[in-house]
Image (cartoon, rainbow, N blue to C red):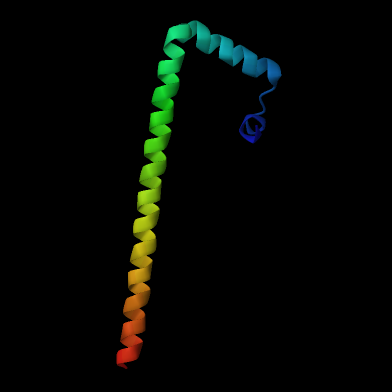
Length: 73
């Protein structure tokens, strides 16, 4: 709901936007569009999580290298 408020959309604007989407794509295409949107969001989140994990692992490795260097001194 916050996202809608962010763009300053009220109830009438949302209803109008949904009506336009229904007119443009038809009732049969909307589920297909939503599936595609859901798949895209899942892929994006998966890629984001992978990159986040790689960065964290890289930071851990760097910290471990610094600890090993201090031990050797």
